[in-house]
Image (tube, rainbow, N blue to C red; front, side, top):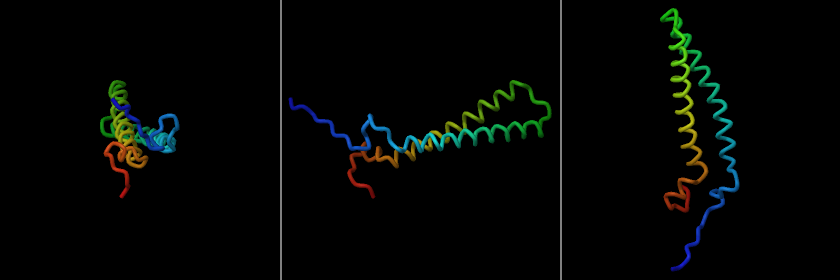
Amino acid sequence: MEAMTEHRPPHSDPRRPSPSWSHYWRLMRWMVLAAIVAVAAALYYLHVEGGLVSIHMVIATIAGVGASVLLGAGLMLLVFMSSGSGHDEDVGGRKDRP
């Protein structure tokens, strides 16, 4: 059998970090701040509308709101990073970008 050669475009080299990753982590730091603000706003709303809030409600709110904001932001940033770095074209077999 003929040996298959593996062709990787320069942006797919696993040894070379992509500039997209540094951009991704910089934006995720901002999203952590957004998650903290969202948690604070949710806790404030619960305090204003419900009065005394138990520690269990506080923990559940921090975990639920914080995780939801960070998960949504992280996944959306990964989608944009994948599209912008050219990995989507690698998978689809397209050589040209529109």
